Image (tube, rainbow, N blue to C red; front, side):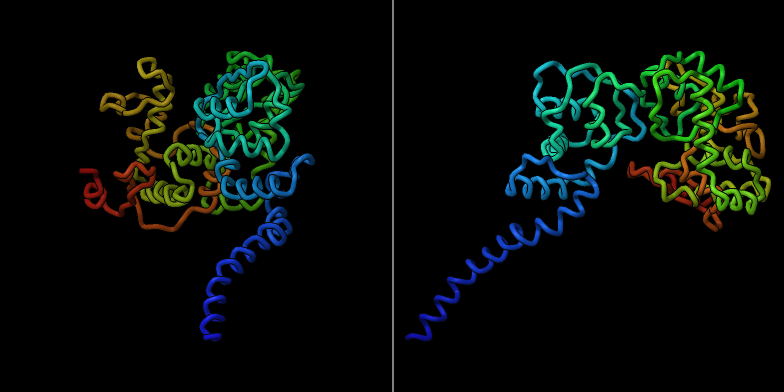
Length: 366
């Protein structure tokens, strides 16, 4: 009977021991280990937070990490965002999500409380971009009238699209002035995508010099060697990288797409790539966009040296600002037997690759 009672007591005690073990982990071990990882990404917690609140927020930040450190839309448009005096962080977070500037309002609010920024957000008019992650947007909300301007250049933008973003960044430079100067200096393709923190006094010439200098610094000797090994000058590499940038949706496919174009160039096959035709067409007033989509059969007949359906080889210049991943894909392309690719049918942005035209045709969506 005593043995049975002991066994029964042990069974009852097991859940309690497990609970105590979990409690010990979250109150003693977790506060020592996990915060180091969170601090490295999100900074130190606000000093006014108690142990329990700090632990809870740290757990939530770990859960929301990707949603906070990745932008809501790397290709989204810059937009205005106004915070009214007395507006709560909860409402601000919800409106940011509704406007597509952040991924998750709850995650954003947790970060604000953790960092102490929930009491520091300032009322005012802001210019924000969904290409920024939530941490960068939170930082921007601390000062509606910063001494510096923030210009975001997205990968795949053509000169005119960068020009549109310039006056919305806080710089006193008109779109026309910037585009005219950039065109005069043949800067298409050499405006490296990224976020630029600039003095508001920056003029068009200084801005263009900064963008081009950043590009030059980003092209490493290793990459230059890769371009040379592929038989390309730097300018030719930028042209091809700009095409890869517009064709690829998933970065990991860029080296494969680059290999397709290299394979075509080797045998004298036309590149036949839509983005070059879109570039030649320019702004589509009916669609209200720079990149006409879809292209018609008539579009494909446009007489332009940028129409790679008519003219063989590379077009005369870059068609957009390629990012580092596209540039590296051209420097170090995959080695494949492919000559064709087309979008998959699942909307993932990925592609089917084919060696023969018959195989390419069989990859068409039903």
